[in-house]
Image 1 (cartoon, rainbow, N blue to C red):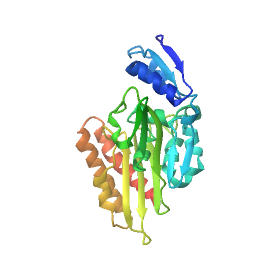
Image 2: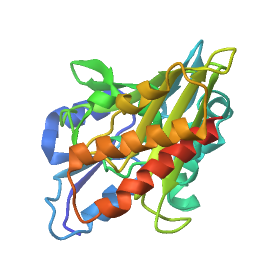
Image 3: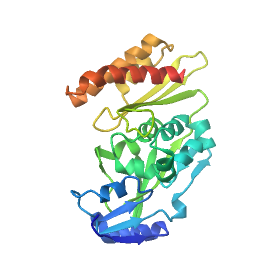
Image 4: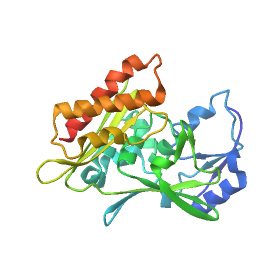
Length: 284
């Protein structure tokens, strides 16, 4: 590991000042489950300074305010999967957190790091986009809010400026007429990076008819997004296996239209369709 300066900060203001001073020469340390691995690699540009934000109490916690859930970026995956608030109002996010890494990784890794690392296999991002999450980015001179789905440019690259700090993730609680699920496919049952994943939410009226649908695949498209082409197929329909198969096939078609056909397509094409069907079935 090449040498770098280490700077521990204890407030959001102190963190933003450090980022304003060092800019792209600074890397943020939260849980460290990704960054510390990267710093040991020989072929990367080592930052001049690592800004440790793990001591900032303002960046911890999960809050429920009226109809909104606010997640602080230092909330760990273990805290997400154990949160009674999320179990009641956003269970698909708890499900996603429960399959990340190992207990040790879940105890250290943070939702903020999972988002800002922008790896296509990030497990919490598809549920958050399905939930309509917004994020707050703060810098020394102010802050801005944007939809999480608008944050990403490509894998490992976001629209956040080097001097900006993620300070909050927020979304509306799911209503009682909404059912959700998250499915992850890995090479093994634990300690696995997602090969593919699906976050799904279905809203129903009193007659059991689907009034709204949200489908967000993970590790399937260049950047995450809702597959509205598949969602629209289900609006106004009664849930059925055939309906969900059709939606899954549409997601598969959309994936190929974005990625083209490559060596992995023969495998991913039927598998993503099946995962979508299963995720939708879990919703009902």
